[in-house]
Length: 130
Image (cartoon, rainbow, N blue to C red; front, side):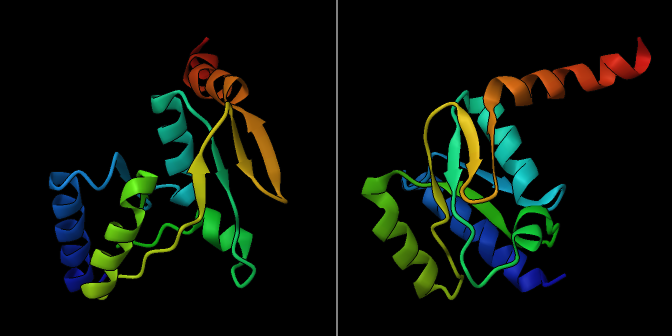
């Protein structure tokens, strides 16, 4: 764990939130990116389209539980300001997709309707104890 990087990430998220540059943020520590996307899509009631960069392994991108990372929803009008702030402070930021539609779409890999995700998410624990 890199405590300096964790602190930098927290400072950036606090500043960006205070300055109206982000709509939402979610850490990637438990379940990785795919879990954060599922939780965020279900909570917000909107889907997402994600592109896996060519230089990344999709499995690593989606399931890595490394610390010091977050997914952030940035309005298009604030994208440049947010990436400039991250760059000026030495924290990498990569645009991987958009909030859109009613599916979770990892382009070229899978598409799952939010209704299907919600049904699986809400039925798991009751199904275990039925």
